[in-house]
Length: 296
Image (tube, rainbow, N blue to C red; front, side):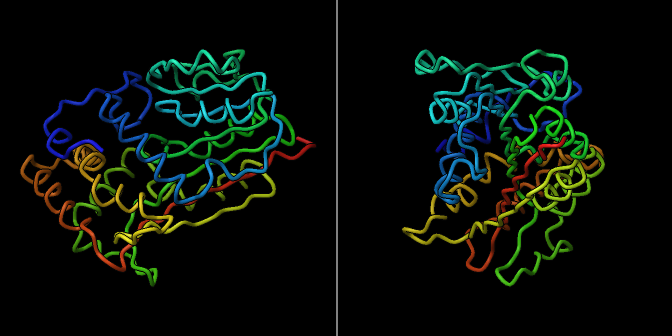
């Protein structure tokens, strides 16, 4: 895990697609954070993916980041003809890529390329995977419909995401009048068209798009450490790594609220206080799967 001082003092870089809303950086420090996050999520979920996919011909990982899941899917499905990862930023090459002949990466915006790029032809994919697009998706309904369109009949989609709120274990939400920074990033995100409750809404987006056999699982990420628990690594990630996520995310989410620099700095300090380790406080992550019916 990257040291907090380095996270706070760096000047991050970002993707250059002006039509895409994705808020987070793409520099090496962020890539390390993404890989740590992936490993922690796998420990929590006990799976990389949950959809009942067995022998796909074509697999697509949307918003693939460092390509860590794409490479896993490539090795997990060696008989697949194509395993594509697509991202707004160029995916760094790895020496192991040479041993994965079905693996390739696409640099670009899925929403612009789907149905246009021959690799993303409608009705061509057996399994679509995407995760953590909450901070970059401004049209979930349209996005999920395009996933439906790119799938072959009987193909599966899986999406995982947070609800950008913090709860207590009795499901009480944190008091937003006290957590002003959280209330404002939610207001600012809504002004940008973001759905910061996407994790719990994806099942409805899927049903509206025509998916069947939609299932959703809820995973609670505790803000207190329990040695040996499946959630241990993810707890460490949300407690110790909040600086890597929210420090740079807060000013970008509240851009349209016209707040002062002093207010943004106060929000950053308050975030560090509110997201400290505390028993009884959890964040919720959801995994949702759905199948395109054969008759489609």
